[in-house]
Length: 195
Image (cartoon, rainbow, N blue to C red; front, side):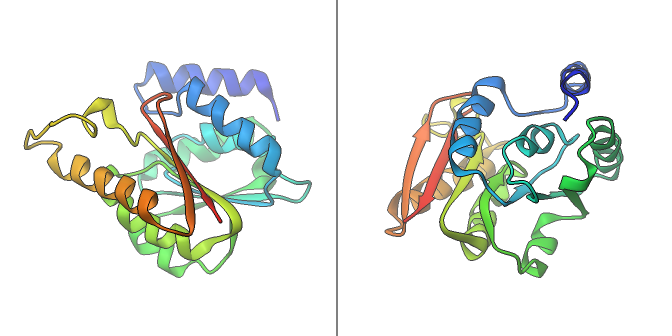
């Protein structure tokens, strides 16, 4: 992986106000990935490819990341970035809406990373549980959503996202097959290990 290019990709995303994974969230995830050495990762929400590129470092030798992005402009930019970072052979991009694409995927993954439409997190979780291997991990980023999720926030604009993120936390916390931690890094990270 070309680290210099990665730094440029990060700076450009920040300048363009494209939401990419925060440094402290990435650090926590990297600790898990270093330990797990995943062979297959599924990422829901590619944006410009930054996090997927970062994750390639922790894959097994022939490991692969499948990532889903619905915005054509972002897909184009992600493809260019992945090429610049010299990791094209490790990342596959599915272009389209994750809600439509996920049910068509029949792979099994060591790690699933959810970082797309906040209002769809419960659906993404259902699909992730179907695809994650025993002992695998499901990460969900932005789970505390600017602090709204744990407050009595009820403004109309974000109500659906907040409600669905709360539902996600409830589901992963109460599911007997999962061991879940909600970490206050970045904008909140849920880490659910499959028992």
